[in-house]
Amino acid sequence: MRRHIDSEKISQALATLDIHEYGDVLQCMRCGTCLPTCPTYRTDGIETQSPRGRVAMIKAVIDGRLTASEEFIEHMYHCLDCRNCQTVCPAGVKVGELVLEARYRIEEHIPQPLLKRFMLNHAICDQDRLSRYLVPVRLYQNLGIQRLVRKSQLLKYISSDLEFMESLLPQLPVRPLSHSIPQEVPAVGKELGRVGFFLGCAMNLIFADISLDTIDVLSRSGYTVVIPKNQQCCGTPNIAEGERRIYREMAEHNISLFQDKNLDAIVTDCAACGSELKTYRETLSKRAATAKKAEAFSSKIRDISEFLVAADSEEMKFGPIEEVVCFHDPCHLRHGQKLVSPQRDLLRRIPDLTYREIPDEGQCCGSAGIYNITHRDRSMKILEAKVKAISKTGAQRVITSNPGCFMQLKYASEKLAAGWQVSHMSQMLRVSLERGQTSRNSNSH
Ligand code: SF4
Ligand code: SF4
Image 1: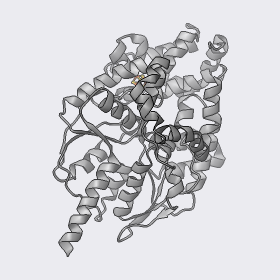
Image 2: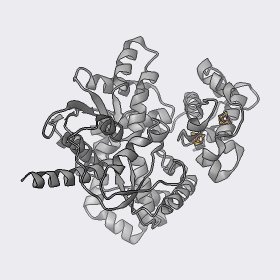
Image 3: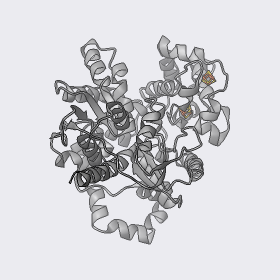
Image 4: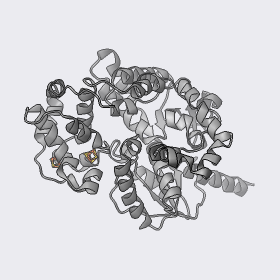
C-alpha cells in the first residue's frame, strides 16, 4: 500500500535540522574518501548510493533545490547505517547519523504501517510480551512442522520473501534466558569485582545459550554478574526507524534498573546494544532530569571483549583451540564503538589458534538490523562480497559478536555453502577458558 507523502512538510522538517547536524552537511568537501568504503556504493557504483551523494541530497532538500519525494525517502532507507564512511571521513561528517536524523523527520510526517507501529510502540517494549508472540514460532520448530515445511519447500511456492525469512530463523530456546537465570551469578574463585549484564532482546529470546556463555566467561574471570529483571530493548530498532518517544522511555527504564547496584561496569555481548547504550548519554542529554544518569550509565557500558582485555584478570586461563579463525567486525563494534583490537587481542591469547584477518577493512555483512529483509537483493550482494573476502582467509570458523551478523553469516554458511562455522566471541572464550581451567585443576592435583 502506498503511503501519502507530504513532501513540503518533510522538506520543512528537514530544514529544522539543528546547527550541529546542518554543520555536518556543510563540512562535506566532496573529497570522495568515503566512496570505496560504502557498501551500497560498492555494489551499485552510483553517486546517489554513496555517503557523499546522501549528504548532497539532504542538503539539496534543506536548500529547497530538491523535493523530499518518494525517491528521496527511498534513498534515505538504502543506507545501512554501518558508519564505515564516518570512520574514514577526514572532515568528520557523520553521514549515518545524519541519515537517521533525516529518517526521524520523514517518519514524523508520513503515516506508519500498522505492523511497524505495533512492533515499535508495543511489542518491543516488553521482552516477556515479545516472548509470548514467539510461542507460535517455538511450536512451529518443536512440533516438527518446520522440518516438514523445509523438506516440502512449501514456502517457496507461497512467497520467496517468507521462505528467506524462515531460512534465517535460528532454533529458539524453550524459554528466554531472563526466565531461567538468577539476578546475581557469583564469581568463580576470587571475586575481582561486580559487573552488570545487559541482556538485549535478541540475545535473551533467540541466543540465550550465547548469553549464558557470556555470563559464564565473566564469572570464570572473577566477576560477580548482576542481571536485573525486566530489562527492555536498547532501542536500536526504534532509532533506526525514526521512532523516538518509546525509545526514550525504554532508555530511561534501562538506566533505572542498573542504578545503585554498585557496579564496576555494565557488560553486553551484543554490539548493537553496546553501541546504542553508549549513546544514551547523547540521546538523553537534552533533558536535565536524565542527562546525568544517562552519562553515568553510558560511561559504564563495555563490550565483552573490551571489558575482558581491560580487566586482564589473572583468573583468565586460556586453554587451546586448534583452529584457523577470522573475526567479522560488526559495524556497531568497529565503527559505532571504534573497537577493533580487543577482540583480536583476546583471540590471539588462545593457544593453538591461528588468527587471520579478513581482507576487506571491516565491510558490513549486509545484515544491518532488518535490512536483509527490507532490502534483500542488495543485502545478498553485500553478503556475497563478504563471503568472498572471508574465503580468502582459509578460516574454518568466523567469529563475530552481534546477533544480526551471526544470523547473516550462518545463512551464508548453510545456504551459500561458504564452508565455515560461525561462533560468537563468548562461545570461543567459554570453550577456551573451560579447557584452561580443566588443565589448571588437573595440574594442581
Ligand atoms: S569523506 Fe566526508 S568530506 Fe569526503 S565526500 Fe565523504 S562525507 Fe564528504
Ligand atoms: S552509513 Fe554505511 S551505507 Fe550509509 S552512507 Fe555510510 S558507508 Fe554508506
